Length: 362
Picture 1 (cartoon, helix red, strand yellow):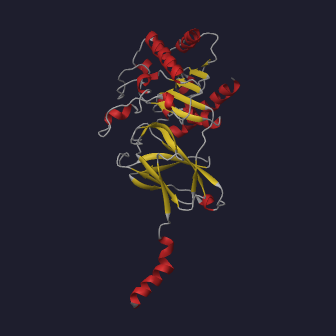
Picture 2: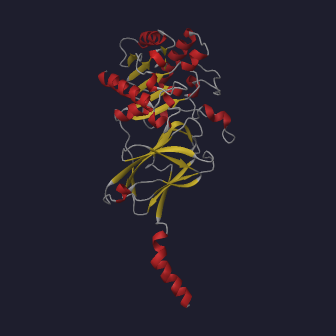
């Protein structure tokens, strides 16, 4: 008896602080969890940039609970607290602690904290999102998405390939953030726009865009199939479409006529599925910069033809505005990784700043 009382006293003096706090848990399908991007029926993520947002009052502890179909050994995600800079965290199966920082602990109990979490990569990017746990005295408030919604379509030059934080440092994500808008990004490294096999991608983006899964589905043992994605059922409705694509088509020698036809067909299909669409921005290539100021471009004049033919198809009375964005000279050799000539962190920031100016002026 003496030892039991002594043990209890020791626990009271030394162990209470180490005990986990009481928690409340809600499922990932709860209305207070704002999911964006592409999620399958198992609430499993696909495509770089897919993620969720949480508004939580009196937040002190946050745990994200994941299932067995999460990338092994870990999936890298980017986390932002209250709109601050993103930082990287490796999420694994089971419970994951989200670092909140000292400033959160000092907040008033009635203050709301915004937490944003997105998968970083275009591969090894799957999280099976089961639930969210927070301190028991916290409360959830539904996130209200912004009215302006950008849909970005592209390849490695838009997916943030080679960047430390992946797509969360890429120009599409930066543009939407700077313009205080929501973003949806469907970009796949190595993929063509036309539907063909390319550099490990079973399909082109014009096909895969209409699927829940990205082209990495063919490498998954538990989910090596595709399911249809209905753009019309998305929670946020696209108001602005931005497309930068064609590098891989050009590398495969895809004829200009076939590329243009694919482009126009894709635009028409997306227009029909997106009644809120107001602006289409068709970007010309950033090019491949080299030392000495030389930049290699591709499909010269093709994007202007796309815009010309598309405007003819929609007609002069259409409320849809289509813009050709000439990106010639936007980046130089110092804006790319020397070994693969893809935009580096500075390069993506440069592209984002220039595009924000263009969009703001329209």
